[in-house]
Length: 109
Image 1 (cartoon, rainbow, N blue to C red):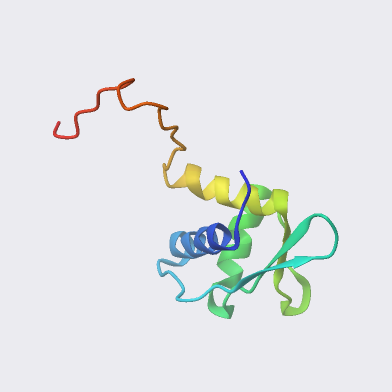
Image 2 (cartoon, rainbow, N blue to C red):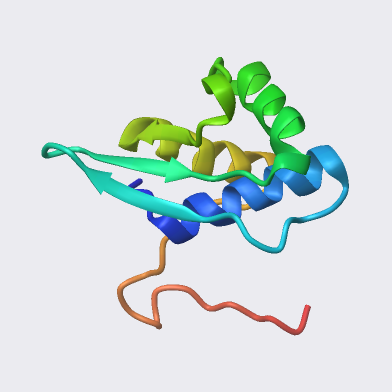
């Protein structure tokens, strides 16, 4: 899975909601390209930082940024966060058949 700024933002918001009971209004996420691999720079609001960082440390082994700096993630780390949230919330990736006659789905049941 290739993460985007939107998917990372939504994943961090969901983690904040899981850990704090409230979803932050804004979680700025930017991409910094220093080489061929982008780095995601995530500014987690102060009131959510401890809980979100603890959650990431517990589930993925990520450390806390020093001196209040933003969270910086490689593409692989960002992807792991998004996939973790998808698994935790029970959202599964689904494939769509190539033609509509391959599967007959009845949504009324």
